[in-house]
Picture 1 (cartoon, rainbow, N blue to C red):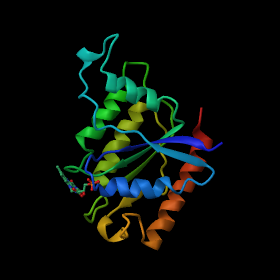
Picture 2: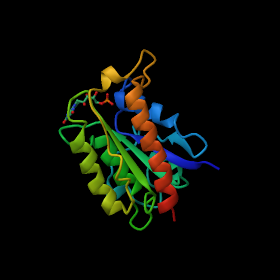
Picture 3: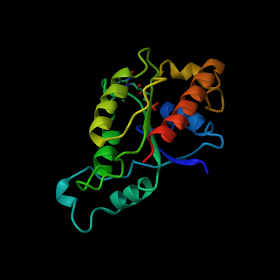
Length: 184
Ligand SMILES: Cc1cc2nc3c(=O)[nH]c(=O)nc-3n(C[C@H](O)[C@H](O)[C@H](O)COP(=O)(O)O)c2cc1C
């Protein structure tokens, strides 16, 4: 059985480059990883006052979708050298109520995407800081910083560049191994 891997995409933009890269990755799981997208755009902003016996329905839906996942792939753009607020909000929602985080102990991997030159390094590493507190073992190598993304995509919006495809496949294969080593 392939491992169930949730993908969270940190961009809500219709033509998001990050989602396009994530879609190409999602097609590379073979018989080892079955990726599925879990949407984060409708989540109300985290407010601890709403953490009652009846939290917002979207929070419940999101937590229920994440809970059975065996691993999580975070695909993030970079906003102001950090993670977009929408993704940080999803992390905060999934991490609570205290002691019931849907992320805890799940192996994770991070891919950061930008049209710019620096590969969204700032977002990638700010995100890794949260993964430490979430107690998610995060794949170290290969690091996946996708810069200059527009020229790597083909007309169908898939990663068409052969070198990048090879790199992404290596990343997916390493993640599959990482999940087997770190699953609980
Ligand atoms: C609020 C905002 C802040 C941004 N800050 C950065 C940044 O710090 N570094 C960077 O490389 N690109 C930055 N960008 C440009 C994004 O990389 C670009 O919009 C990219 O297309 C976003 O990813 P997406 O295509 O998946 O939506 C920023 C864009 C926005 C809207």
